[in-house]
Length: 298
Image (cartoon, rainbow, N blue to C red; front, side, top):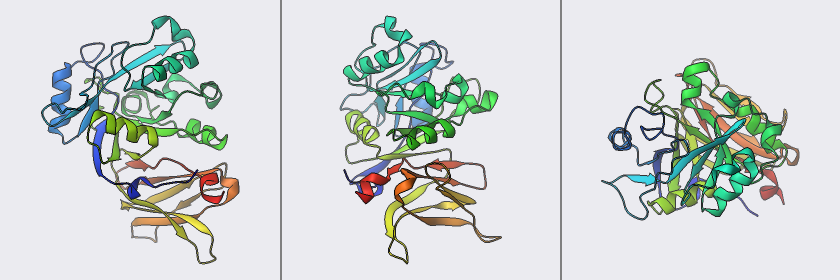
């Protein structure tokens, strides 16, 4: 298997929120009002993900120039599962077994993700047995706004270090009563600006997540000693962190009085994976999806 950077893929960048609640469950705006808010704030797509309610997507067409992804948030004891692209709801009696529920979502054409693991008290050990999930929410705006439990970096890194291949989402989880809207989003790279095209790009990891900073490029490079490396370019940031298994990454800081617009770090076999976080002066973070070292060094 080889690695292809999302920035090397054809197409353009589309901005979207993947976790949204409305009056269909416990949100305070109607689906039409939610769509209008994100459309008016220059988003390209949205998933409405009410609790055990299936909201269909746009299909191959647009709704007033805006793409809607089918979605739902499902849950059982000890977990919530964000589900995108599913054609219908799975049987609710599966909610006691997250692996069985995730398999059913896959069979319905959907992508299952564990929602807000930190807020749920889920450890990486709780998540690891569920092989069917596509990833986790690395940032959940409403959980951060309400109780400071919005970031799930530790769970993600522990699972990646074990060899799991999981993407990371930044989402609003907006309910329209906690000021969560517009804070966590994904930037998807696709040459097919339709529901199917966006879902395909999400499944392939052709996106990055952010609460503000922009990632401008992610590519392979070569160090002076000939060693392969990962290079990132971003909007001005205070720190850039290369995360790898255990302590095999690095935090990069600029010279005093300056900002960073990029950094490079060598790729080594014992890292297992590399992913990048770009932190700006306003407290925003952008996350790349992981590069798996075996895809580069094999």
